[in-house]
Image (cartoon, rainbow, N blue to C red):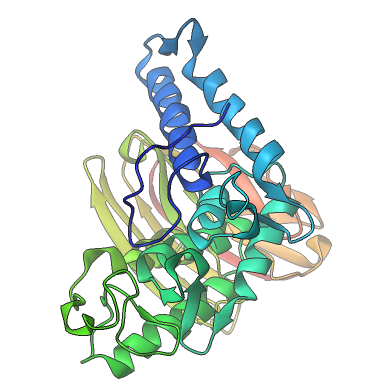
Length: 342
């Protein structure tokens, strides 16, 4: 099941219309999110012609992967037309990872890696944008890199430094340029060669890295109900950042995080603040260290030692290549996290 788009107006790209991947991804996300929201609210999941929205979302996901995935390139095609199968767009591929339309973590990592091969010295070039560099779509690509590489911010931080750094140093100290050209010139093909002066220097859609840095590099993010459940999953590896301070406020209360890799007595140290009457999970980065060579404590209690969980008051900790995770932390408040070599 693929949505057939009859309109052609979009964010500044060409070739919109037909069975377009970006439009179908937005449909998938709307259907899936609507179904999830219904479950959270305890109401019946909506349906269309007897088919629940969640099932419809699954049908869209299957159809996109069956009809638009190009295994020879490792990216999704733009649409099913003769021209569309030759175009592998930045927007659709970024959204595919951002909205979890890929069918495996390996496929998501492949999309992330192949998107990065198209960068030039000025940023991420958008083929569907006729060679434009769009901070709007690159903001979505940043999210895709962070979701495709759990715990590792190397690609995301590289494109932020490259593209937003270029804007900062070139265009009147502004990092909110609407778009510019692949040559680094202040030209947006969507407007035409003669309308460079028309390009906005205060475009809100160029602020995407703010949320990515807060929620993914900082790592403390709400999961449900304005943070009634939350997770701490810092992308500390590959960030080239030794210390992070960030936070925000939701209706449930304050969320704050400070982490550092520069503590003399540990390879990772963090302080978290989450609202009372909330629950969450805490993932501590391992930086590739052997799980039996590290020791992790939360609020002074050792939760991981000798390669296994070691404290029964929380749910048992589990280890992976990237993290040691304590799931179902039964309360909010302040948490002090220390990870050190055993």
